[in-house]
Image 1 (cartoon, rainbow, N blue to C red):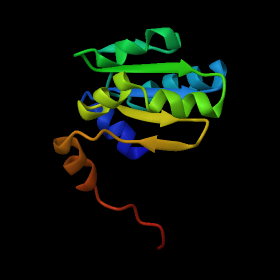
Image 2 (cartoon, rainbow, N blue to C red; image 1 turned 180 degrees about the horizontal axis):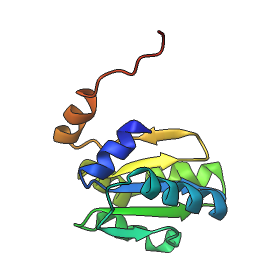
Image 3 (cartoon, rainbow, N blue to C red; image 1 turned 30 degrees about the vertical axis):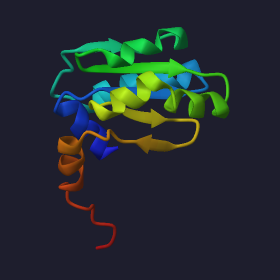
Image 4 (spheres, one colour; image 1 turned 45 degrees about the vertical axis):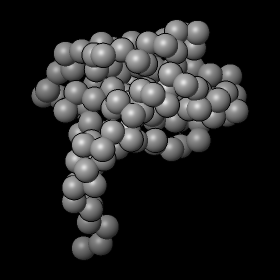
Length: 123
């Protein structure tokens, strides 16, 4: 969660995917709330139809929610050509169905994420 918020703060795109429109919308809106006192100044679409997947190649940062029918559809979405290309250019996918985060493969951003300190789990 912290890594995703950090990516939003440095204006990187995030795609929230799930099987429930309520859950996807709530998660996307929660990310905006967690950014406060900062404000997301770029594109925000809590729900985008799956037939508009090409939007993930947008040159501007975005926070988008997308509802799919099944877990297999989420896998198919992550393997879509548009999504693969977008991940190389900064897109991170938060998959609520599989409870996974697929971070961007953009080298500069990968270094930024790996440079984050590991959270303390014991006191």
